Length: 436
Image (spheres, rainbow, N blue to C red):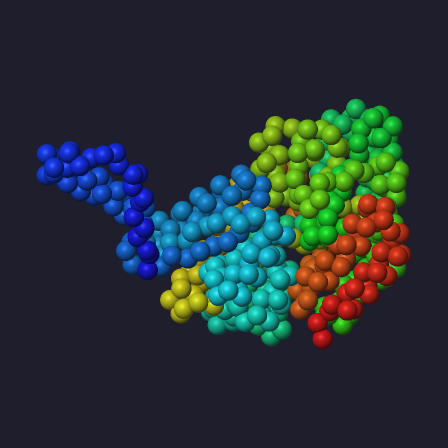
């Protein structure tokens, strides 16, 4: 039930004589103002009996939030008994403390947009509504991309649905490549290093690397780890940081830094595109969710598949949608929103508006999306890379594993540690922290 909060009226001047002389007119005016205010409030509410669902998210960049809000508004208009309030609560690393505090304080939102690697932590807290019954009856079971099904599961249950998906590539500025005389795009680590040397020789900063201990830095580094032959275990017991592929990938990033071929983002801000848009760097590792922002900036850009060492690899990204435990009525209303998110209508509009890859495979085949891809050659790179995309595990304690790995990456990039020493320290830290 909604609470009606009356406005705080400004403190009046000395109105006693006015009230004495014109009490009736003053009361009529006051009632008229109050009536107008109440009408305005009523106009904003879908209905007196509507279920208000709170939806926390970290959708970025800002133009993508506008796309989301329009889609949420469309759902609300069609469901007068449900009103979803979408609230941006910061980027994932900023969100996590708020979410955990809300769960522990019994004040969790109804819906949450977040990376599925957090699943185990929420399940341990008993915070989520399992989705097995809903998923078994869902018409979308045959439409969701099979590659994304593992992100929904933890243990023997389904706990979330994919909201949208993506993977990582290297965005580059063709004008800067042309200015440096580069005619062949790199496909391997060695070629990437050569191209970077050519750019540097022309006074162009080649590459931006994400700095930080948070998940985004780990996310952008993992394709190099996987391409070097690395594997992440699916359980806390089988997940290790001190491995030869991890050292190889860290050594490559360290060499890029030491040779002046890469600069670092601001701490925990590796997703920001300002330097790339201003032409201060020629390349940046990011994903298709940035397409709308780049197009609006008016700059030239292209996309390279992630360069390979031993095997092609990229990181499967995207966020899932979780339903928190509440009441049967609220949970049922949240499940209706899940149906909407998986629909071909939502996924088409979201993909066209943001550049994210649709999770509903019917979208990839429909005429609107095919026409969109034809006009967006960058998207073809990400669609083709899905075959080489690998998902991060969502085992219990992954957040601690990622934090230990992130600290190792940061220490190497800042020159505080060698790759070997960094992974040894990170492995020790992980073995002390990992769930047992």
